[in-house]
Length: 90
Image (cartoon, rainbow, N blue to C red; front, side, top):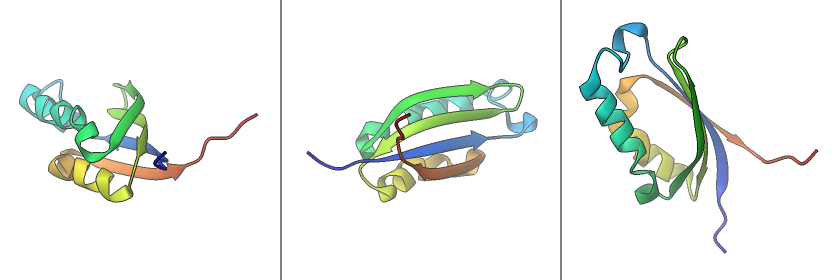
């Protein structure tokens, strides 16, 4: 079994660049998200806060390089923070 890593991804944009006002940019952004598997990335879940123009994801990836390659075409559409995380049992 191939090892994978977990990452918390936070994406934000400004009200001026919101997808609500620019449908074409939203299509590009979400189109690239749908290609995650091509880069060895799985989106485990995604939630958002439209009032803060922020999307949060837990992603699983084979390599950090795969995440960078996956996000590279859309990196200029906002601000990305990617943090490695580990699962904890209570």
